[in-house]
Length: 257
Image (tube, rainbow, N blue to C red):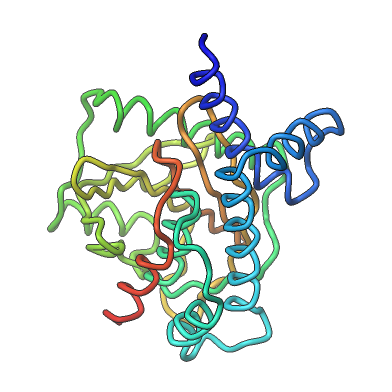
């Protein structure tokens, strides 16, 4: 491997570890490796700054003591005031957008143990790779009555949005993550696709809206996964695109609601 390819591989690996690095979840040796690389690489340093800023903006925007009313407008105002860099890891951006689209609130506690949480990420990444990237034949609901019947199995009170920012709903099916049924929905824009997993039980009306907490971001092979929990509700977003524009997605959703 030549120096240029080795450098790119190092950057990809380091950027995939930034969430754990900033959360203090890495072993000392790995943390030192990431820190040394970031200190010598302007591109990865910019990604670290962006990750820190995203964490700060999300903490402020989704403060659990704030009511859900006007949440979208507050997020738009806070992000505009932050003057933040405009690109973050794609699954984090999409998950944040879906939280808005479904009217969910971030800030609650997880209802699943660490082992189940890891299995959710692993299984979501495997499903995305097999069913979306490789295009394994599956029976999908493309919309209409088929999609309504699928969603009714999970309460039916939180329909999947037709769009998430620039991404358009394509298809959905029932899948299994860590032994539990989930909705697996696929969204796409241009040549980019990502998977949204929602389950295993959803609230039936707005009075049951949960408080979601980001549990982890994880890379499984080429797939990055962002995971949120709220009691019985789990939201995961999986994609093979490492960076995305969270501000653009937020702006499009808040402007359209």
